[in-house]
Length: 440
Image 1 (cartoon, rainbow, N blue to C red):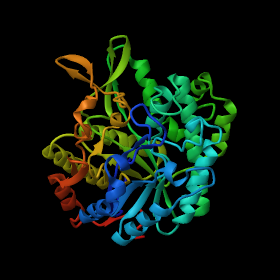
Image 2 (tube, one colour):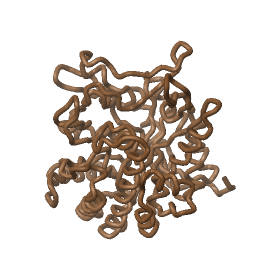
Image 3 (cartoon, one colour):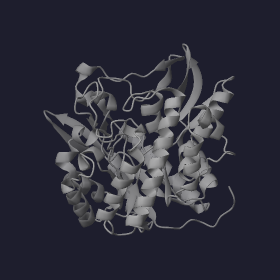
Image 4 (cartoon, one colour):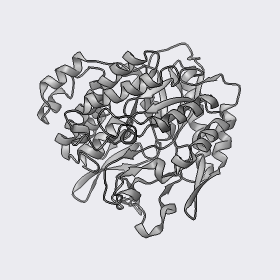
């Protein structure tokens, strides 16, 4: 990276509420997977927004469940989202709306690979932007194209249940088409709304002999963003790979001509989950997690800034574990961002995700392994499995939040932790702060 003057834009202190919503029947839940329902956020949304405001957050990444808002083509139900936007405005919280977080409405029979998907997503994005123009400062068309393509295209966990590299390619191209058209629709409806393209990030290393596999994964890290920005022309390093996996050249040409550039790139980074070493396990190659701490995030931010020359928001970060561990990571990541800003790197701020713990996705999918994690246990590479079904919902709580979830009979309470106080201390320090679009 080149020498730059210090980056002194106001720091964005933000939080996010885990909002995965897959509104299709699943193995463990006929009603699908909706984190807002599992954590009782639909009941406590006012209180949860107040928690975010109470610790000095100026922005909040917040999901709109597409399957509920748009239950049929051309039909819209804004009754709940209208209330949420009004309350966020009252609290001074700048919303960064997640439009799609791993799921589509069921009327898109082919889900993400339905031929109608890109235009349906654009219609949805334009409708949201038009309705909340001037009241919502930021919007994310689709959270984590890389992870979405992995779950629904490579491994077939959720609809449309595609598999293999051909499935991954089919999904990622369709996602890029939807994101592109959504960006154009948002800009037509609300040109002042800041578009945050949020992507999962990975730090890859490998055992000896797996260099080629690592190179492909390193290149795929940027592929969804390259597609959206219209960069995958015949000279691109993965153009031929996509063609070889069944992508029509005309679709890639259309993505080049329809290029769309977001205002901000969001990078989702979890120091103990985003870093993987490729290794052999039984008859396959797997990614074994390791802790890359702040070095990993520095490399991720540097790579995206050098490639795209756009401002960066650390759009998700947290660690799982006890209170001290979460506070240590918060202090470390804040220190890194301030250091990089002093070096002139355009990092806008951070989003602690999640505000409160969430329920592991396996709970609503019949204990199916959704996120594949491998670790070295007793000197051997071993998979990490979800809890046993009979353990109760509290065994599925992922301890990553500033507030702890506690099952209390049929209720789920929020209990503050030292990490919430540490966040407040940082956010209310004398560092100038703002939300993404200043006060709504």
